[in-house]
Length: 119
Image (cartoon, rainbow, N blue to C red; front, side):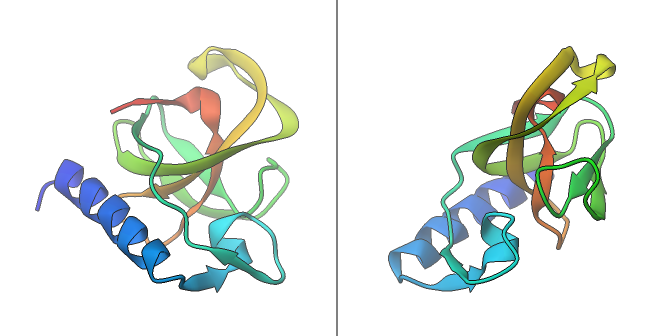
């Protein structure tokens, strides 16, 4: 299965599971560390513009879970405003963070939205 097919499969699985009303720990779904959150559907297939860290929270001071490599596909699940960041290689400053599930990774988390492009 190629990366694009894997990303689509992950998005389809998320949609199917959300229809069942299943939940996952909130840290996996929306960045919070307590309670439950519904599994979210893939809102967009994205690709990393450069190598970027995947954080546990929408904050560059939070724990790094993984690295999303330049060109790697992922499934964007949501966006949220957080602390401002400057990503010169990605086009400047922003406060918008994206919660993504990078294809081929077991760690979903938050990345700088400016560093993503449509797949």
